[in-house]
Image 1 (cartoon, helix red, strand yellow):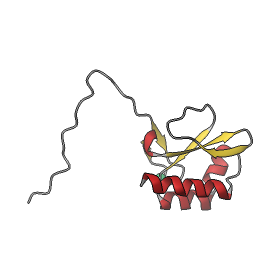
Image 2 (image 1 turned 45 degrees about the vertical axis):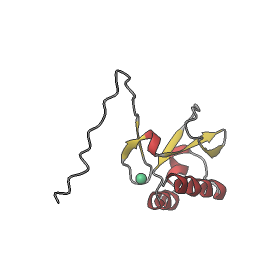
Image 3 (image 1 turned 90 degrees about the vertical axis):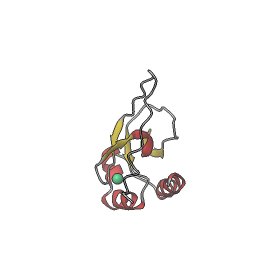
Image 4 (image 1 turned 120 degrees about the horizontal axis):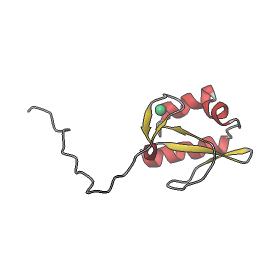
Length: 103
Ligand SMILES: [Zn+2]
């Protein structure tokens, strides 16, 4: 057993270039593809969980769908600071729920 199975050939996009914008997680500060992160954004004076695939203009911040990042972001109030509004209990629950669905 050599154990080098993760070098699967990646099919090339036939002419169609799909750009995956990278975004930074507010907790671990790693750059990741936007699609793999959960987005929180400003909606007026409030913060909301941005709908998946939805395009909404406005200030947003991202977090990995992982408990450690959610916990860290919550403790350090990363979203509150990044977006200038307070995270609510409901929103944290929505984030945790979203993270579970993704995992
Ligand atoms: Zn993270």
